[in-house]
Image 1 (cartoon, rainbow, N blue to C red):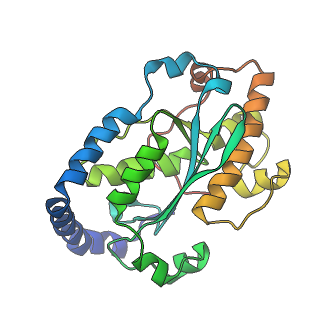
Image 2: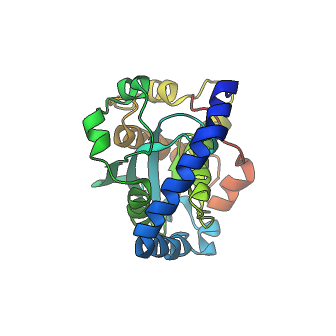
Length: 250
């Protein structure tokens, strides 16, 4: 999907100035929280021992975003974050994270219809940095997992850079890249692999539901990796190329 010229011009002429003014106003009124988030980001990433730790012994935060679009650099925003913890080969349910996020701009009707969120829920949501701070606290000292991380992780990285936060550099695993490695001859969108593996189907495009289904899929993928003697983060990193640019969620 390409950015339309109209979208680009609107962003250059209006959205950039609007976001900058709202950002400065928000930070000015929430300086202690902003500075605390900077400190929390520094502590979020596990130490380097994670690289050689067994995949079975790591703790993961499997998460999903719902957003207003695909391009954070062009003004698209997060509207919900859902996450589940996984370790010792099981989902730590009911431990979970879910928040609706209130964006600066109105959410398009087609996005509301897709996600099932209502305008009232959006209005009652938290500001992005408040929800992101809570997510960072929830995910501290874990490895992030998303399907695909090339969308969800990179979206957060781009959005936090817009907020002047450059420290969001977590260890993460792109579960779709793992699926592509294991099943190179299959189409591995989340919908397809959920169906193929017989994962319980929950309402799609709800951030917590998608995170839960991704966690179910990820546990299965870990078992398949072990059958191929891929048992550490380093081994997995050697076979999975982490993309630098966001991609459109399949």
